[in-house]
Amino acid sequence: MLDRYNRRINYLRISVTDRCNLRCNYCMPENDPCLLSHDDILSFEEIQQVVAVAVPLGIDKIRLTGGEPLVRKDIVKLVAMIASVPGVKDLGMTTNGILLEKHAKSLSKAGLKRVNISLDTVDPDKFRSITRGGDIGRVFRGIDAAKQAGLLPVKVNCVVEDNSVDKDAKAVAEYCRKNGLQIRYIPKMDLGTGKFGIVHGGTGGNCIQCNRLRITSDGKVKPCLFSDLAYDIRQLGIQKAIRQALLSKPERGSVNQENLFHNIGG
Image (cartoon, rainbow, N blue to C red; front, side):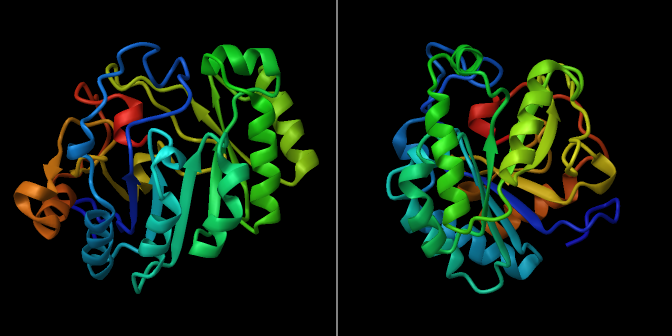
């Protein structure tokens, strides 16, 4: 699929839930995060059908996001359902890693290819502060489990305030070097003000090279993270919603005042 600016769109990020087992201070409100009703969230069958319709249109790369995708009940079953769709070449997941030790082997067997794990510091106390209570030891064990399960390459997403040379970013980089992980520095973003930057070590944030669409956990196809535009698959049908999102994909992101990171899939 080509958009209006001749960018090849082959990547679909699917939010499978707006729930999360952490409360990172830049992502989810500590209290009253305005969560969706379970009835509004796409079923596994709906998600599989989205993929089945999207692949013939040109999508061959799928990433599962959240919230935190591993808190979705029976997530391994969903991975297997998506992996069974002919034409899916790359199936990944972005996770905070807290539940990865439990699920890594089963996810790999179900057809997941690789994982990106969020890690902004290797200091246990600072991690607990950023995540409002998270146990970094569980993340480290999750990373080890992902490597053992063959979910390679394991990539680490490190959110940085300004650049990659601050103390925490450098410590995460050293941890990645010692453990054979790939690091991606993600500039801290603000949806409401349109603040974003290019991911160091990836293509995110580079509007010229953007190749993705997003679908929220309640079935809205979004052409851009930094846009209020959204097209409901339940109202329009999957193919029409995807095509309208493609045709309206902006040349560059602006602002998004309709979503928060936990309900758009980042």
